[in-house]
Image 1 (cartoon, rainbow, N blue to C red):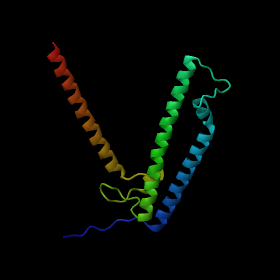
Image 2: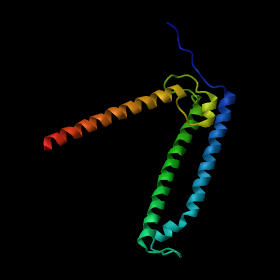
Image 3: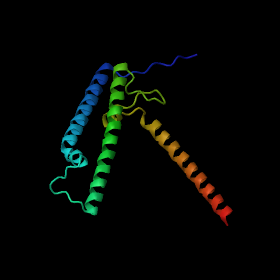
Image 4: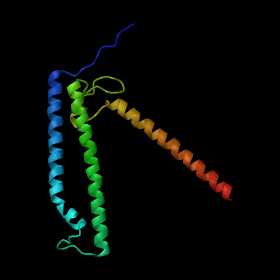
Length: 155
């Protein structure tokens, strides 16, 4: 029986990607801090303090709500990305960074430079996405058929 060779990224590349990941984390945390300082007015308004230039007009309130919702969505997305960055840094420290979690081959450096949080090589990622699309199509067909059956029962 042939033993599978353990694949690892070389130490020089690991150091390069660790620095890249730490840089991205620093940039993200810095941008989040700046965003928090810029949005202080939201907390003032929530505490009942009316800000100069704020109107109680319904359209303005809707616009404020939409803006707040967008900010929450962005913050959630940035929070997820921060978790991905932390996980990638941990993989660097363990020496498992850059190894595809599906096929266990090295992920090309060009992919990691573009998406340093990647955990799959391009082929495995595309295959995963293809399977997800197929599962979604099957689920949509099932829901459509179920809806058709309900409509037939009502007739």
